[in-house]
Amino acid sequence: MFLNYIKEFFVKKSLKNNLHNVKNEVFTSNIQTIGLLVDESNFQHSEDIVKELVSQGIAPKNIKIVVYRSKFKEKETYSLPTFGKNDIKWNGGITADFLNEFTETEFDLLISYYDIETAVLMMITSKSKAKFKVGFASVDKNLNRWMIDTAIENYKLFVYELFKYLKSIK
Figure 1 (cartoon, helix red, strand yellow):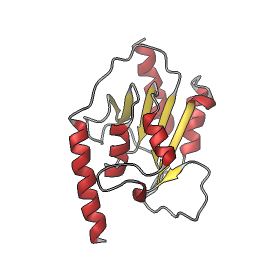
Figure 2 (cartoon, rainbow, N blue to C red):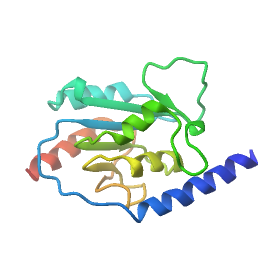
Figure 3 (cartoon, rainbow, N blue to C red):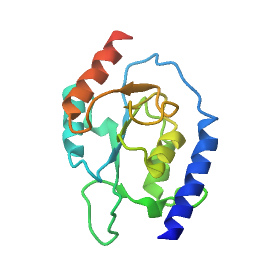
Figure 4 (tube, rainbow, N blue to C red):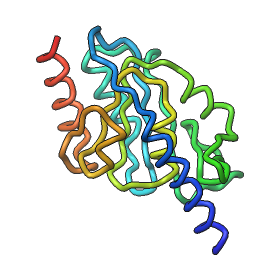
């Protein structure tokens, strides 16, 4: 238990150092690829978010999703690529291959779908090479370029507002 607190402290320290190196890119093109980082600790509608994105004209093959669970059981099988805090090292390094691939992919848009500041999720968001990052207003303002202020359960409104703003800046 105590070691988890120490690990989280070091991950937060590494995250703080990463936040100083954030580069804000300008949104200039149509959205083709989307990375979706979801916290399923208290939210179970990840596949519904994907359906909403598809209804907005994004091809399902261009949406890549990874899911975080605070209580992750390694022997249990999940339908989506799922990770827990054991997949992050003390220094903020990532041990899971699919998670490394996710952060190294240059998505046009990264949706950080979590509204509670969790050091592991924030580390994945900050390490992502996505061109444009969107998340909730309740999370650190330095992580995402755009913040949408809505409840996490209201994913339809989140996607609607996201695409409303994306269409207005084109």
